[in-house]
Length: 419
RNA sequence: GGAGAGAUGGCCGAGCGGACGAAGGCGGCGGUCUUGAAAACCGCUGAUGGUUAUGCCAUCCGGGGGUUCGAAUCCCUCUCUCUCCGCCA
Image (cartoon, rainbow, N blue to C red; front, side, top):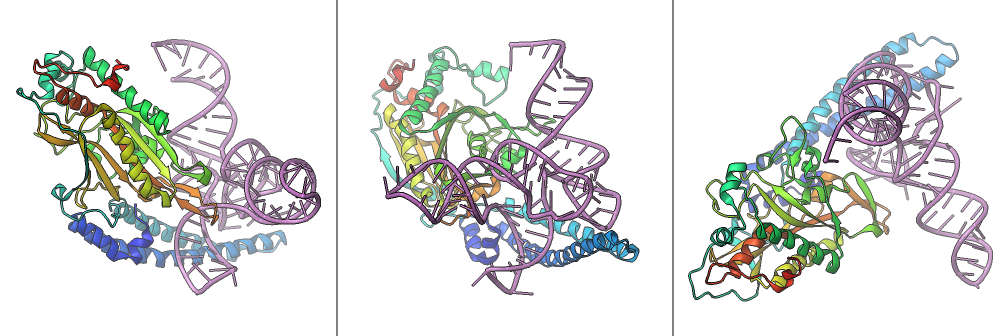
């Protein structure tokens, strides 16, 4: 959520952002918002004047009554005033509702240094790491390797649930679990994160806090007849832990991590990545969330990416870091780095982590603040999140990068003690 | 699932329909004292919005609604928490 004052006073900034995000159609909403804002202010001044009068007169009635004097005439007047106030209050409420809806659907402002372009082809490669493996035999896809090793049963997963689900079996289940523990250990011991196991279902307020609702409800799974949604990422519960709180400055920065399954409807991606583990309705992820002081968020984003990269470095798998273009940057983010891992089967780099600085966008939605010790004022915190990493895709990367001619694969040294 | 109790500021906790944005305590901040610290003492210490802005105004006592000239206080309703009984991984 953007600051109302920015939308009103720095409208060009917001228009520029919508242009760069390739969302020209949403510009109309800004005009509506401005109109509603002015209307609201006018009504507010009117109704507050009436309320002021009521407060004064009510006090007077109290005094008259205690002296035993008649209050009938005044009483009648006040009753009419009360009705008037009620009507105006209702009008203000309706305007608030409308403008809130608009506000909740406007994406975050973008950082100055985000590469400008309407889509992912404008993403900018920041750095590459590692040696891509060369194979002298016919390269296999991860699902071929997994099925040969009997560690994932896609067919029976479909029987149990449907398409886009996997049934990990035997050594496969063990490898997945090893990866989770390995990742968590690195972040806990080397990066000083605090581990959580959050609810895997959250309510709509929480989903709104991080920006999944109201705009992206089609991407979510909702539990029938309850105000529960399956989490699409642990970013949602972790970031909202301190919703509606005022933190002390000395508590910051907060580094939170959690392993959770993630549930996504993948609406709109029919036909994409239909085979294998790449795109599932349910996948495991270790998530990193930071809650920091505003002047720290830029450097914390760089650190966050490094922390996620560390996992692939330890596993010795080639990857590159890209900065997403203005058109590809997510709704809540002001700047996003993706880590893309090399997948020999696809001969392509594929996203394995997405690290975003959301600045005060989520903090304003979720109402997360801290007391600035210097100014004594209450200010919004900045929030960041990143995958550290997507476990299923790391599983794929291991199978494909460490495959052998006979169709088997080897395990990176760092992981061996977890198996 | 049945019966009952409760939700008040950063925390604890008081609050007969007008005195209440709210006693008291703790914590925090500033000061006196001290070589320094502690103790003691004194003072200050909520948020949001509006504004003609060192000020003023409005709103907020779990959420929503009602009664009333006026609600933290009375009524309805929802959510959550706690206690007892039952069931259960």
